[in-house]
Image (tube, rainbow, N blue to C red; front, side, top):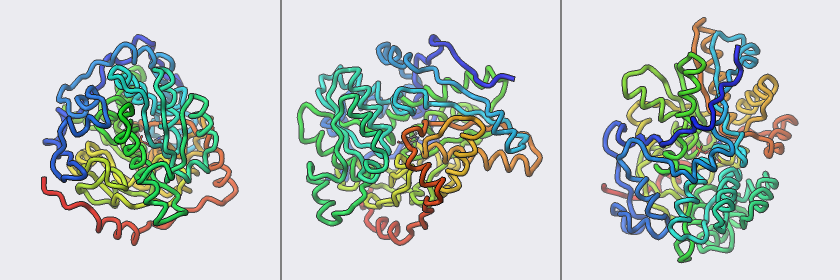
Length: 451
Ligand SMILES: Cc1ncc(COP(=O)(O)O)c(C=O)c1O
């Protein structure tokens, strides 16, 4: 009757798993935002160090994790895998529910898994400062920490609505030495442009990315770091799923369904890709991405070439998108307010290898409160989407009278998100209507790209 499955430090993976050689078909090219032609490594060198550009396109199935990175991973990895027995009991389900908990990292989420190697490769390349965006502040705090550990400066453009909602995330970033700027800001041309059109803009990840990319592109000593979406970020996150596979073996179980919440795709992919490798080898496993109903890129977006940011400075990728200038409603799961999706996740969805479902924020918070009441941990609002999906799967198993093994990613804790819980518990949490008109308008502005 074990509750946690724990690995020892020497079982921290030595390699990341790269899904690119196992993808169903070739990857679509990535296009330059100005020329609309495929980008080469030199185009990306203005904002990324070469080691990360190489990882972005690598066709090696296994990529060695540098020892200094593993050394920092040891501060919190391997993370625990839990069997959610109390949640199972509360749901009276025949399903067996497991969750992989990434909230034990110093920043409170999975984000340091990629922040640490990104800071490391930048340090090796002689970068002095990193610029980035953050939604809820989880990625920003992870990068602030990683920059602190590798002695890099860090500038973070934080989406304005989250800057107001999550003041202590800002404090955490500052504690680790980062400069935090609410976005849209007057510091960049991109920010000034948005403010001229809409002085009250709540900001979005797409806007904050534009500001950070502009900052990096206009300063020689500065590079840009992205917390999700890109292939190399997803690669770094696969430590989650690689550990989880070992821990499921310890539990003597194998998941029928693997679930992750989806913003740009990094925690979802980190958990799911190692299981998709089994699926590619013929194993039966379903994989489900859970996203917010008010920013439903996977379930309501179109699979098309689009800009990664609002001001059209970031490369154009083929992905499920709601349009680069779509500004999602200010839900509390700030880390899920991205107009697009990872190109790898998008291709897998288009090929039918994975599924996606969208959830409104109230049912997600309801599941999060049930989870906190049974399993005791307070989930990040982003992760509550995965919990909702897992609870629904467990309730379906009960209805069908079937056993089912469910594994979901608890990507972070919510102890700095209490404003969101206050809003839910006092009945003030709004379920935004699906912003159909705004999305239609935004989708009419997709770039015309011929690959
Ligand atoms: C706890 C947590 N989970 C999930 C996400 C979504 O991002 P991604 O899709 O890259 O995992 C975020 C983003 O900030 C987050 O903070």
